[in-house]
Amino acid sequence: MFGGCRSLLSLDLTNFVTSNVIDMGAMFRDCSKLKEINVSHFDTSNVRDMQDMFEGCSELNSLDLGNFDTSNAYVMSHMFDGCINLRSLNISSFNTSKVSDMTWMFKDCKSLKDIDVSHFDTSSVYDEDTEQGHDYFTGLEGMFYNCASLTQIDLSGFKIVKNLKTSQMFYGCSNLKTIYCGNKWNIDKVWESTEMFANCANLVGGKGTTYDSEHTDIEYARIDGGPNSPGYFTDINAEYIEAIDLGLPSGTLWASCNVGATKPEEVGGYYAWGETEEKAEYTKDTYLYWSNQFNGGDDIGENICGTNYDVAHVKWSQGWQMPDLDQIKELLENCSHEVVEQNNVKGMKFTGTNGNSIFLPITGLYIGNKVYGKDDYCVYWTGIPPTPLGTAVYYLYVDGKGETHWDYLPENRYYRYYGMPIRPVINSKLAGPGTDTIGGGDEV
Image (cartoon, rainbow, N blue to C red):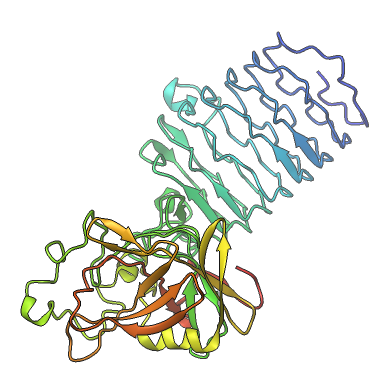
């Protein structure tokens, strides 16, 4: 309709009634001098074709399509292609359940730092070349081509159901570091993926796999499984971990949350000492290492940190482990502490000399099938038992009155089978590319 109006400087669409429109393809294509387009009142509920709609609108800085009803749209290819100065794009209302073509949708949106497509349903997207014997559209090919300012993108809603191409999907996303996906993501139907990740030099998978120019096709388009199963994607449902630098002399970094949690204030899991899974009851009868009852439990080692008895090591890997006694002492000796509330959760805040801090929620502990002491006190496991080995294990104690200390459980009490939280640590030298490190004065 306005396609090719390259000298158009402004456009008043106030009186437009679009409730019966079914085709908006190329509506504003190559309106290269327009700096704003107000379509907030557009009724798009019957629109089927949005191909090339804003293609070549190279002077647009922002575009709010938050009101768009796209429930009947079938084609969105090249929709924002060439919007090189677009810095803000609201597509939060987009329903893409019927869309069959998203090729080159955001091509050359090189100024966009964020594109929220986490809600996109791609189950109808397909390659017409293979499905119908034509060469009209190819699925997801070039979708984010040359989106050079993107640093992360969330594909957790993406599900590939039909045959399609992903060739050059992320080509030239030179600042892209993280691609999130969920359990819907699969690549079984992808039949061509040439240069899918070409020139994505900063890309890092969830377990530290770094970009390799020899692997730029579908091979690494999967959740990163580490050295044995490398991938460029990060599991959106994985625990979110930050390594907090408290300025400690040893270089120890403390995790931002407990094992089993995704936020600092969350309890996470309760674990018996040496066990790596939660359970319904924490008793002598359910404890895995209680066959040698005369001595108070089985000998599973004088230091289980970093072993297969260490839940932090088993579930997080990448150098994470339970703290040992020296690391607990170092925390207490080098950090100030105070009782605070974070998101309505009471806990102990430890602040290092560099101003960084960690928050340990006061979670209580699990005995039998109940949690005792929640909001009053908490005991965090270490991986170190005193010698000679008995029922005792060193721990970090915190309570709601501001008391904190290290100690070990009495020999005549069967505490090792109690369920307690764990706050992992990692040495700064082991915090690889898959670990976000907070340091240098940043706040948690």
